[in-house]
Length: 629
Image (cartoon, rainbow, N blue to C red; front, side, top):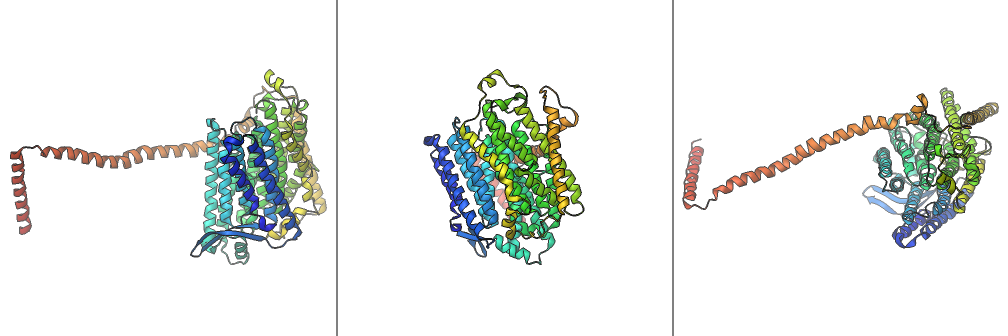
């Protein structure tokens, strides 16, 4: 089956071509065609996964299709690598992606651009699968850029809204900043080793003798790329604005797949990061800062999707904390569980928005649990999972990350304390969202009350399946029986160092503290919002968090406006007055000169004879002058 891995991205590509080219004639059948393409990829991914699992840590299989670049000494094949890491991500992308496609059939059923929407979704899944199955960094980069393009197309899908278009442009530009760093890292690798293949590079790095400053430079360049795709400080503000896209886009791209590309890339490059403790320390600090800042902002947002967006940024921060301490398995584990419960929460928010006739402000909701029981129950399960309450999936993955952080040297305890503060806020803002949305009295309009209803089966069935996965997904990472760790171990250079060396009693105490902190966050949220006053104004620090730390305003002041002023100066002074002025000046000078010279052509014979005499005199003077000197 591994030889057929190229079919996994091919099915979504075919779906993209069919739905894209036939968008004007397919109608609603485009959704089923696109969903069938993803289902085909999922079934094949599952078969490949089972074959890899049965191999018990066999060497990665590389399937080469053709020579992509073959010029002189530059030989880069278009090839795919099948191993534990790629198959895990293939399953998550296609499995969760299929559920989101089914959900979208009902959610986007009344949209005129439904076929175009599904063609973009298929193209995105194709790009993401290319990213995680490529056997070298160039193929990964092709998929990397592809998901960036699809993100732009899907965020700005409703392009007639100018604000949505601006959000898409913001996502595109900020991702390009990160992509430049990633591209420089790729150039550095190729210039030194002459190859971009993972296996060849791993042999080169693990063989030793590589300058540590070079390793750190490559690692940091790659991390810059990861900060863009995975929304880490300072390149994180695009993701909350990306909620302008349809809700299924938020669930697929900005919760389960694209934003985890940075985690995949660093895990795939673990042989580089294992040799650069400095780069890992930077990742740890940035991850913690991102988790904290995003969590504080999420505590005071009123748009249901914005709360989940900042929650995603915060959870990505936890994943990068794991990467920063070398706990790659823990990071991938949290990617999997997060894909389940965050996709569930986003789709649940879409169900709420659908039932509320498009309303997204939670201050205008309330009391929805009696009208939308399935949505409420599944959303509640998602909240428990992300809060870290056992035995749901989020508890196991987050607890594993924090244990690795706690055991990370002398500074680990400090990072653990701040990490648990972020975990406290996670439980608080998620249950704040739950209580305001589903409890209390209904605060919407009478029109919304009259049309309030549960979503159709095509939307609720994916919610139920994701809820089950959010409950049971943690079983793959139960301590002492960590199936995922055993599966990924052969791929990780640092696998022998990523186990958290803590005593049994210490682990029990840390787990108890984590659960107590999560329960404390829930209790605080309940005490504050059991009687919610939508008219209450936020002040002080809460207002600061509500305005998102004024980070967008800060970026606008120190980056956007200066760049606009500089570009305006170059446009008006350098471009118009300088370059255009010089070019136009030459033309005007020639035109003015020709206007004067043509006056010599008067048509008078006497004047022409006069000019001839003058010309002879001038030639005589020149001749005498040169002969004399």
